Amino acid sequence: MSPNSKESVGTSIDYQAQHKQRLAYMPWLYFSLKPKHLSWAKPWQDEIQAKLIALETISIGDNSFIAPQARLFAEPGRDIIIGAKCMIAADSFLHGPIAMGNEVAINHGCSLDGGRGKIIIGDQTRIANNVTIYAFNHGMRPDTPIYQQSASSKGIVIGKDVWIGAQAGIVDGVKIGDCAVIGMGALVTKDVPDYAIVAGNPARIIGDRRDKK
Image (cartoon, rainbow, N blue to C red):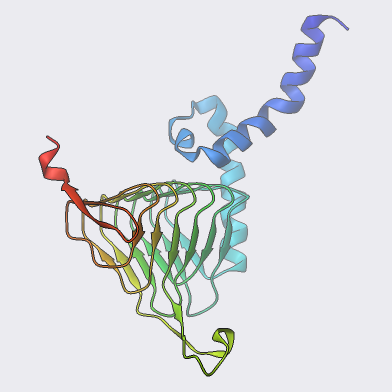
């Protein structure tokens, strides 16, 4: 087989599958696809999203991207609402109730559970890989095994234009203000003001975005 023949076979068999994987782990690329790529990528996304909407209590805004390897679960009363132009990358786990604004990004390997209180995420917030956001907590009385105790759930609110760094964690009951930055690996246990930059375990304020001009 000639080199040109090998190239032709490789392109026809592998290109789309490989490009779908690339998009699944780097979904921001979806929004800059050329028309010739959108001709197959858009129907692929439409099919993925239609199946999710049929099987789960999910609504999805226009021009959003959801990786086929993402796992979304939303029973009645635990809805997932996804705004327009959002993206959810591969290997993420989302369990409602969750409400996202527009242009929200959830990168690969994230884990979000809304408990009973709900996770709310504002417009244009970006969540890096392997972030954990759990809107519930177990009881810890010493007289009963933890797994047998009732869970509490206050909910988590994340403002607009927030950046949450890789491997950060956010616990139940926290409110993160607009335009805040959560450093890589931070564990957020208390409310974060607007524009604050926090880092550490437990997270503490180390700066303000308005000083970064």
